[in-house]
Amino acid sequence: GQIARHDGFVPLFAAACLLACARYLADGGARYLALAGVAVGLGASCKYNAVALAVLPVVTVLLGVGPRGLLRLLPAAVLAGAAFAVTSPYVLLDLEAARVDVLYELEHYASNHLGRDRSGGWHYPRTLLTREGPMVAAGALGLVLGVRQRRPAALLAAAVPVVYGLIIQRLPVQVDR
Image (cartoon, rainbow, N blue to C red):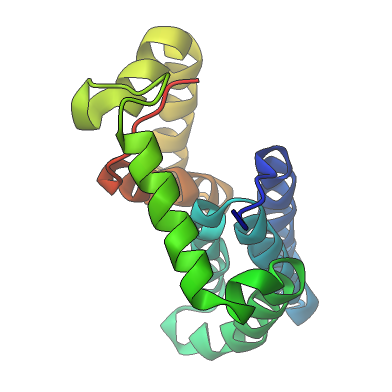
């Protein structure tokens, strides 16, 4: 297949995107949105569902200047696409092969693949709560308090898990490694 997996780099690009967005909120420099866009593209190139990072620059602009500033995201979106294209050119050069590979992986993991989970749509929340309960509870409490107090950092930190959770819960694949 043509799919390369570099999951370990996703947290690096997520942190880079989050840091760039936080710097944008502090300084307002367009270069930070550009850096966030590059981080989104590189993250998505490592693992496709890391495209959920794209919510960070959007939330950042909404927090910083409101809906009227959404056009400021255009350079970040272009840079995200360029970073993805440079690091995953095979996806764009042979869309049909990429589609076939992704569908194969989904079918493979949805079958009786070793590690396949059969616990339904609540697999990930249940796993987090049973394995990392106190840490998840403390983090969730911090996010809830930060969001209630409208702290920009908390809103940014809450955005990705919510979007990622919505994406991953809709997939037919539930793998526990």
